[in-house]
Image (cartoon, rainbow, N blue to C red):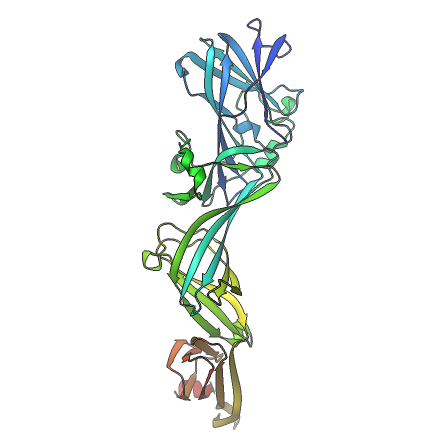
Length: 449
């Protein structure tokens, strides 16, 4: 198991030279650790609490990040007690030693002191995914949300309090590249000697995210006895999900965590046919709204992939319906999910007749205007055992047209200049037919209508 190696070096004399005789004492393991993982960049903020035993005078704390993706230029330390008696002077990086930093700590007391160490690291990530189970009549859905946290940072994080950030973060340097530098601030012969010259060029709006202070939250032991929840709160243009309790996130492992459950979410099923967009097959869509009326609306829903199933009997057996990816859904916003092509609802348009008419001629006797007249029959079949609603769009390729229609469609509307939409509702195992005659005008005939 890989760990960040932290040891404390107590200097016999007040010498600042790294080569002086020192005694090394291995520190206890972390008391607590909190991880804030972003999903828009390979970036995680780690915040550790550890207990140091300081001697009065100059102390040196040795920190190694070997085999991890920690950015050493982001390392910070703050005393949590006796701050007025402890001066964390600086963090230096020995020029001929790789993956090693030395904190110079001037203490006016000799006592155990809790400190907080923060840094950015790479290799931790999270993503959201969802499972929806439709009722047999497909009018409602039980929705479960999950997050999957993966750790490839080179470091194990035991009993970590974990926070997940939704939102775009501005980052110019990759943390993983900073972690792999032989010299954190560049080669000594090519950089200024100022202690903070060459700082990494990333910018995190910590004040907006509330990450600067007081991040560690207390939890009761009873949390371990029930399913964990994910607490959510808005932070300006970001959104924060806090996983309740603690989780051990082992290096090279991933863990699935339940985010939320919502029962009896009202949904709408719609079948769409538009040959120019979807091809010759019907596509099924599922829609709902992220609001209280749909038993949701407490928080935005992170983007992810939803797999949809249908309950088929009272024994809880399921049949797979389809899946769709979607983007971040704000509160009170609608979402329409494309579940893919289906074969149990069929739309068959047929060209029944074609002719031309209404010719116009110029002064030379050449044709400069005419009409094209096409007649279509459309047959719609529902082979399912539940009612369905079908939208059929027809694209004409020109804005100069007239139409005559008739048959078993429930609604007709003009969508835009060259598109119309027929809407039909079909009972289980039923067929509907309608027809229309389309006249398109060409040449000077465009301006006669």
